[in-house]
Image 1 (cartoon, rainbow, N blue to C red):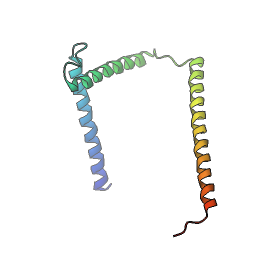
Image 2: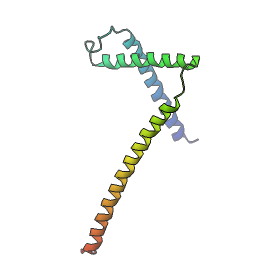
Image 3: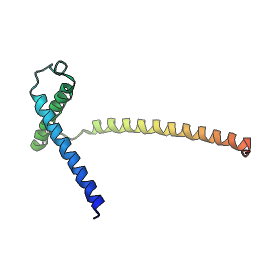
Image 4: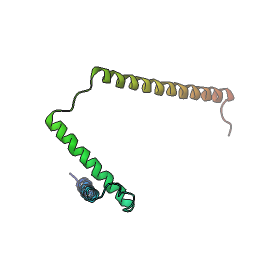
Length: 118
């Protein structure tokens, strides 16, 4: 591999390492906060508290997964999700059709106006 590619990957790894260490530090600081202290402890306290809460939820999720207690979605839940997805896709399709119609109208007007004169 070229030196540029290796340097890119090294920078990428360093960036993630620094971010991981920063997040771990934020979780540690946030874990030491008293409940309701996020607003009183300064602007970084909110991020620290949020990081600590997310870390707690992550650990709970890991425990659920390890115990096998995360239940699969029921057929009814899956149907609801698919119905919502179908609705959103239909909405997007309608908007795309609308944009296409607008573009066709613009094109027709441009063609009717004839070639541009310079």
